[in-house]
Structures are given as C-alpha cells and as structure tokens.
Length: 138
Image (cartoon, rainbow, N blue to C red; front, side, top):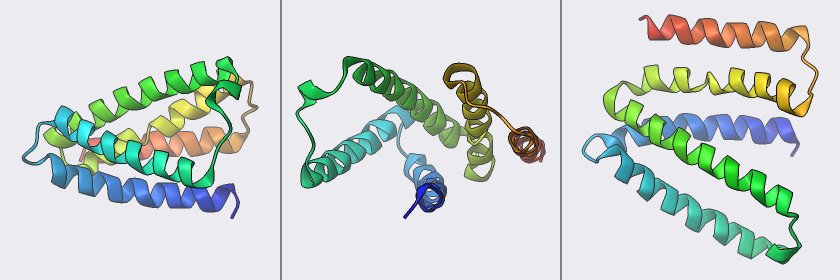
C-alpha cells in the first residue's frame, strides 16, 4: 500500500473517530474523555511497535525525538480542543472545522519545510476553507 491508501484509511478512521468521540463525550467530561482515548492509543501503538520491533531508543537522533515530542504536545492540545468542541457542538459541524488543520498543514509545510505549493494546493485549500465556512454558518 502506498501513501494514498494509508491517507484514505486515516480519513476513514478520523470520520469514525468524530462520531464515536461525540457519543463518548455525551456524559463524560471532555478532558477525561481525551485521557481515556489517549490511553487506548498509547497501548495500541506501543503494542504495534513492540510487535514489529524497533531499534534502541538511544539510537534515535535527538532532533527527531525533539520534533516528535513537540508533535505530541500539538496532538494533545488538538485533541483537548477537539473533544471540548465535540462536547459543546455537533460532530457534523465540529469535524469539518477541525479539518481546517489540512489548510494549516499545507501552509506550515511551505513555510517550515520549504515544500513548493502548486495551484492545486491553493484551490483545494480554498475549497476546504469555503466548505468549513458553509458548514459553520448552517
């Protein structure tokens, strides 16, 4: 499977996540809901990593660890905000707004990673923004 297959699976599971998370936060405080979800993710991912094997953690470059640490912080903050939004709003409105992260990712990739953007990025990003606005104003 290539990157496209994995991306589609990621989007599929993200869609399921929104619905399940909304149902899960109905009667649970959102920060506790994130803690429970994170524990499940932690057990799942370490289980997969241990099953597949990995090099010694000391052999991982410190720069990579630093960026993964920062990514983890960003993920945690994103999840806390997402679950609070789900607790307060409808999943069908919250999830599309959350997907504005795609537009931020495109911009950050250009700014910080030097990735070149083509017209497709601008048009697609614009359509994502337009769709999020349309849904937010329902």
